[in-house]
Length: 244
Image (cartoon, rainbow, N blue to C red; front, side, top):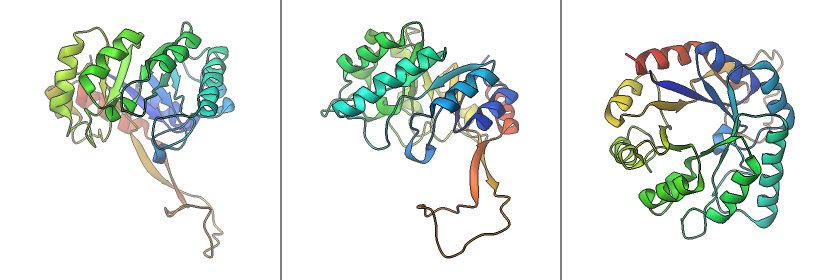
C-alpha cells in the first residue's frame, strides 16, 4: 500500500487530511513561502485533536536554508517545544553556503529531537549534489527525505527520484512531493517506485465576508477573500489513485 503525508497549512487542514486517510501531516504556516514553523497553539491543538502523526516543520522564515545564529537558536527552541508537545516528528533542513548539508547543525537539531523522528525537507533539492546529500542525511539518522528530485515538480524530477530511491536501498524513505495531484500521482508512483508521497491536496475556499473594503489589501497581491484548505475528498482520491 502507498501511504500519503499531507502538507497541512492549519489545524482545519490537518483534520481534513486525517478524514481523507492520510497517515501523517507536515504541519506548516505560510505554504506560499514553502512552509514555516506553525504556532505553539496550532501544534498543541493538532496533537490534541488528531490520531495520525503530526510533524511540524522547523523553518523560521521563507527563502533560503542558510540560517543566522539567531535563526538557528529559534529552530532549536522550536524542536524543544515540539518534543514537549509530544509530536511524532519534526521536519528540518539546513544548508551551508556552498550548497552542502550542514551536518553539524542538523545533528544538533536531531539530538534535541530525542525520540521524535526527523524528516529532511526540500532543502535537499537545493543541495549542490543530491546523491552526496542523500548519504549525508542517511548518516545523520533521518528517516525520510521529501524531494522533487531537484526539479520544480516531482513529476519533472521522476527519473532522479527513481535513482535516489535505488541508491537509498531502504536505508531511508524518499518521499516525492511538489505538484502532486490527481492527474499525475499514479504515473509518479509507477515511474519512481516510491512507497509514500506528499501533497497538500488543497482547494481554494471563498470567504464568507459580506462587507469588503475595496480600497486596500493586507499585504498580498492574491485575492484576500479566498484561502486554501486541504480537501478530505482530494486526499481520498489521491490515495485511491496511488494504489490503483
